[in-house]
Image 1: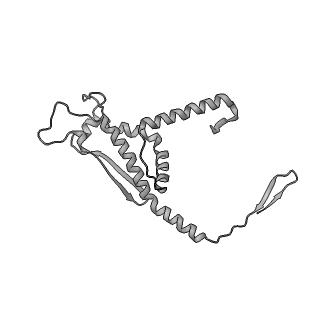
Image 2 (image 1 turned 90 degrees about the vertical axis):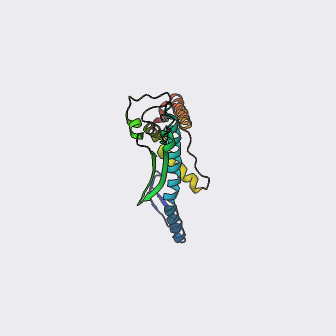
Image 3 (image 1 turned 90 degrees about the horizontal axis):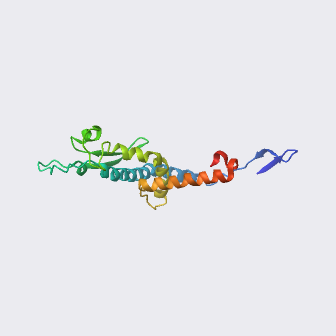
Length: 184
């Protein structure tokens, strides 16, 4: 590479020579990564779904007064995670409760729920996890590629790490002021 410097020593032009030998190997590696990506993403997405469902089960209403002797299962006994499913460039996982009254319990706020049970028992855990999902998926795919495997952290752990990072940012801003600017 040759640099041309101006009168003040600043660089204003450069030429770069690239040796393309071995590019076929790079192309093959990129193709392999692209082919494996949906499967790796599927495994990570399923792990995130398991974390959401675990939290959901702790909030899911449980009918204490009904033993369900008629054979219908308790709501929390019908929790399901299916997938991952792959279609075109999309990867999906489905979380559900498979009983006719699941939608009513989920949507009707006025039903009695003993704490910590609540309505929106699936939606709330999912919404709580959304702010962390993109970084979790990216980190998870990297861990899958390294053959380490990914386990979704508990939401409490994610919040603690995030609050810790916010505290560090505030300390840096107070200590260094405008020196750190928008990059902190």
